Length: 85
Ligand SMILES: Cc1cc2nc3c(=O)[nH]c(=O)nc-3n(C[C@H](O)[C@H](O)[C@H](O)COP(=O)(O)O)c2cc1C
Image (cartoon, rainbow, N blue to C red; front, top):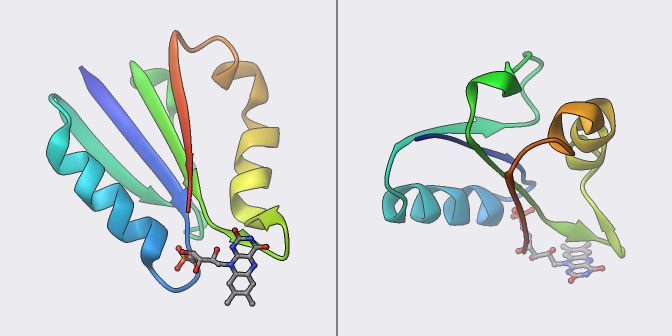
């Protein structure tokens, strides 16, 4: 199974969680910091995990932007999880 963990972090807590999660999961896991200005081919992944930290009541912008701009693909994923720190 191919797994993507895409996360938005400011001080690294969410990234640390992504790394811990990646060690616990079976399959090939790609970690992706959403601050990177690169495209990800979401069609490659069986499971997508999105992580983000909260500041002043809102999840980080890069996480929101990623979800909004990939909504059509994400909503058709059989397995999609969100974690928040
Ligand atoms: C200025 C500031 C504002 C924050 N606002 C919230 C908040 O509204 N709700 C919340 O649950 N946590 C809030 N936090 C806590 C962070 O979300 C928490 O420390 C998180 O683990 C940071 O993750 P990151 O290092 O991946 O960005 C805030 C932290 C800071 C420094």
